[in-house]
Length: 372
Image (cartoon, rainbow, N blue to C red; front, side):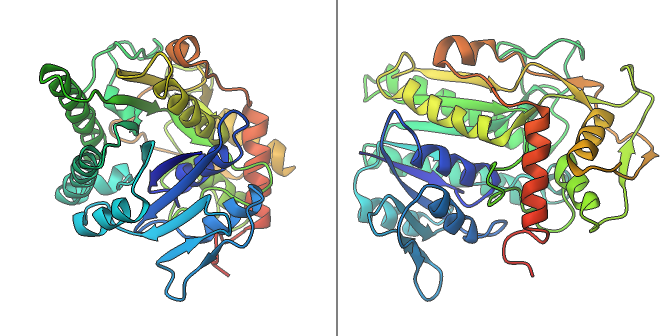
């Protein structure tokens, strides 16, 4: 059984990835989740245990630790920036096959207001994690990056490739932290080769626009406050928590005038992390630095998404037109060819799946996790 350290594993993408790991048919995994719960809920772990048919997952009295009866899902409330606390996790569990690193701050707008905090947390957490991984002989990592590293593309209508320029035209601090971490991982990987040290296996996954929820309706995106992403906002309008969706601009050079993005189902994204682990552990990506786009290669406009959600709900979603937002681009889509060719991953779920699963989550959990 392979033991995987998952940082930030209580969040939206992290928790869905736990399900993919614990229900994998090709490899048996146990996972150790660390999360400071700053923008997530450990209730997601109870849902993970339920879906993965794990028995008796319980938390201790103060909610700082938990485990199921077989030890396949363990939780420790730890901040990745706290070196002593993170070291204690490595000491307790001794051996990890790999780490999947989600932990970090992630709101684009907020990152413009408190940039120093974003640099401190996102880069500091990664620095601490990498040092401890090297010390404890865990040298495989999957990093949760973002398509924001591409910045403003020179050709907005072209699908973005991993070989395209990154870092130059990024418009927000969040994206710059992701880019800087990619550079840290690159430099670190090169340094290990130069000094003939133990080689690291690294996968950098550049996400496009995750949407949807687990098809059971038991898990989904549970933003704190006003959602930063389109689809959870649309879902909250549909359930009556907000009056309408504001579409920021309808004069783009697209068929309906609204911006087009590459949306992928969160469970496809979760499966991409399992594929990346396989690629690193004995696959062709072993001992290499690997970069992959995770997207569908297809685009949907804001109007497309709102209408598709209306179809899932069974009634139109109220929306109004507002002015463009600074920095928004016309089209942003992935070229996911490399992920399919090199690690055998591709998105299999469609727009209706995203919206139906999201609506199931929203109706079963109208106020999210434990927000009655």
